[in-house]
Image 1 (cartoon, one colour):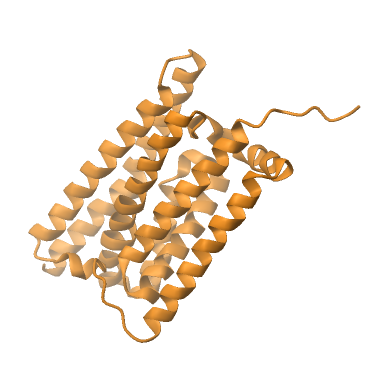
Image 2 (cartoon, helix red, strand yellow):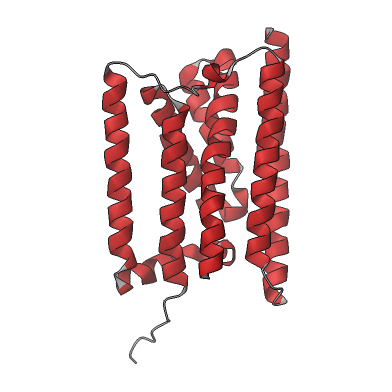
Length: 241
């Protein structure tokens, strides 16, 4: 891949993930809210299905372009081999993920914690799973996001940026773009997802493997979906006068 081709590939990715993608996501959220307001059946299931199909197709297009231009999946960190301190980094990731899973499980059994989760949802509540069927589909959506978003943002985008800006600016910039990609969640959502993107980028850097970030991303989304489903189905309790 020549630098000219890499630069063009990077420009296309930045244009899509920094502008086109956020606009499409905002339109999807507006459609979901209209469907829910009119009691359209399976509104969330439809959103989950469309999102999964779109993310797999988008990943195939960009990853295909990467391969056509002469780069390999190994360039993106799609490998298992680790050495030395990378195993320590992997152990830290495993411990942190288990801690998140356990704390979420405890929160799901605590009415006060669930109330706090519900209060924090805000405009995100309509897109989160409410029923058992929605939760099952959301689980597949979480796996899709874990694989596709890590390939797109921490694989393709961060690697292409690193060739131009160097590693650490690429870590920061790819995380900013990841946050912008979630602009439909509002300013707070941009900040939260940007920080999550930064954590995932650091996971890739320190473990040397995109696969670690994929698994972490999927697990965190699955666990969060289960916690939020418990929160949105928690009966509202009136405070005593």
